[in-house]
Image 1: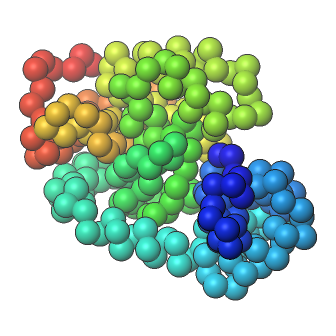
Image 2 (image 1 turned 120 degrees about the vertical axis):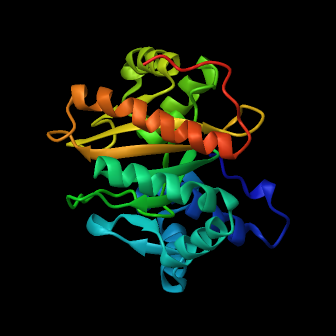
Length: 258
């Protein structure tokens, strides 16, 4: 993101900076120094603005002096999401997948370069991961997020990868190769890409026009979900995604290969 005072009418620049701070934190820029560099303001200005946002509940302070989205934002996101008919259609299907697999199940949608988690159903074994309902995470980092961009061009993939992995540019070629394989099977594997020790199997959900509008995933510990187990879960995840797509009006022309 590129913030500029010129983008805001005279007298509203402070509002613009505050909103840009929130967007930057959402994108993973979460320290005072990084925020000052991202927004183009002095550290003292950023500290004053973040203090106000913390006080009002728009931001929260995590460990090691890092910032996260506050309860006020998460609450607003959840309210908007609860109004979506997608949740009502998805809930029984995801509950069935959760019951069959015994593992954590997610439903996500896209918001610009992020995935927003609309639903999280716990598995039989407790699993401590950061994907809370209302959470925004970069698309390229998670299985649920990458399932949302399977139909994008490779140039878009590259752009999203660079936005998510700014410190790992050398990994782009390998990441794109994986995405090609996942597009061929309509199923994405997360092999500890976002969190160490966590695996995930995800599939896209399409609307009547065939456009990807959501994704579902099954998540577990890497030790409990080795690659062979993930491959056996893939048809179940794809089938659930297909059933939800059908409820949205999508009709597949042919079966997806295993």
